[in-house]
Amino acid sequence: MLDYKYYIGLDAHKRNCYFVVVNRKGKVVMRKRMPTEESELVRFISKFKGPKALVFEETGLAHWLYITFKDKVERLEVCQATKKLAKSDFRDALEMAELLMTNKIKTVFHGETKYVFLRDLVTGYVNLVKNTIQAKNRLSHLFSRTAIRKECLGIYTNKDAIKRLPGSHRQFVANGLFQQLQMLDKQKLKYLKKFNGNIDSFPEMKLIKGIPGFGIVRTNLAVAYMITPHRFATKYNLFSYAMLVRHHQKSDGKSYGVKSGFAKIQLKEVFKSAALTALMSDTAFRRKYEGMIANGINERSARSAVARSLAATVMGVWKSEKPYDDNYRENKRNQNVADDT
Image 1: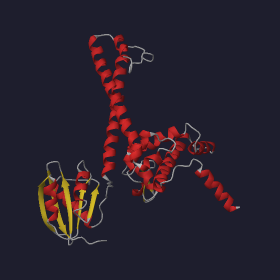
Image 2: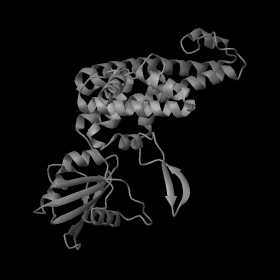
Image 3: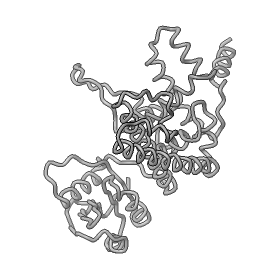
Image 4: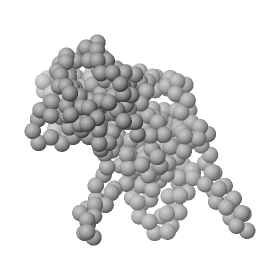
């Protein structure tokens, strides 16, 4: 490992950034507060000649800082937020610098800028869907409170249904929610158009879209959250990141329950929902599911196994850059049988 001349911890905020610079002997050589401006930050880092390593926490500013410094230092790390007993910006920066120097820092992956923009797009879509669900629930509640049977009224698309509500104030609220839903639906179509265009812009999306359970939306979500399959050493690392497995906590033979790792719950939702879709048609995943059920595995465990299989398939197809083959497992199994005979 390269021995750096300086180890720099940075505690960043929207107005000011706090630097602590430690030399290779562990001595603090500078503490400095700087305004959060690109030119000022770069000028400060450039003062230190020789190999240097820089670390800062994962925050809303993290990617901007990553782009700003990635060509200015020999080693750049983004780390998980550390637990703090007493808040102090310089103390936090010093702690990060010391952890970096001893190589005990817990890093967070950062990818290319285009994937950051894709994740922003995906986040906007997910928030839009949540807002749509909330607006529908509120509108539905207005009808439920007056015991109006709304099943055949089409309350989300038929504006005339609002006239059935008693009271002008209640109708006023319902009209506002109805207009909000109309606007959200139009905005959703624009997102879907963007997602569809991404299929041609991201080569990996064309491959993933061919996997059962993955349409345009889930494909965009998977790529935005994974960024690259090469960040995962094995499929089991991906399972942990996607919260598809639980880690048993044991000490001295005693169990302390199970716990999920530092993970992306949105990716869990992608693979879990993709599994449900994949089970609706005759695919290798459906055949695997039916085989597990026949062997006495309960439905929930079988669906979880299918979700993990889908995650492994996405990772494999993306890494190999080869299209999905629904008969791959069966062909491989038959080939192994033929080789044994």
